[in-house]
Amino acid sequence: MSKPSRHRPNKAKSIIAQPLFRSRQEQPAKGKGSYRREAFQSKSWEASYFLTA
Image (cartoon, rainbow, N blue to C red; front, side):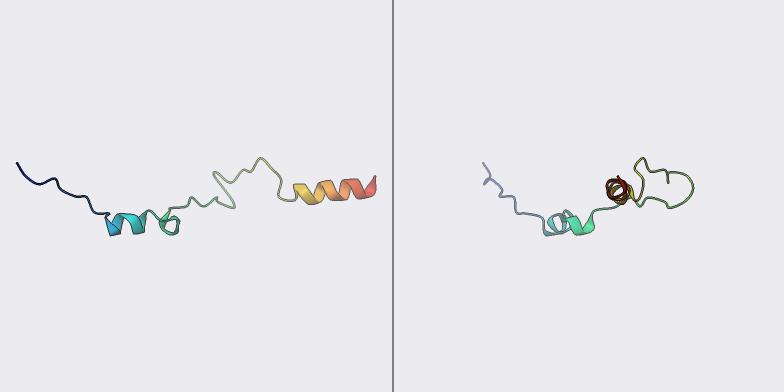
């Protein structure tokens, strides 16, 4: 019978698992995939709508 092996935390894996190393998908400003459902200034539009009414 062999001794039960103890698992130590893998430092490289733990470092890479941090949010700092997460890959991000950048949204293109023009061209394919650049369509946004919500307008850029939707919040300011609401504010201006209530000011005029």
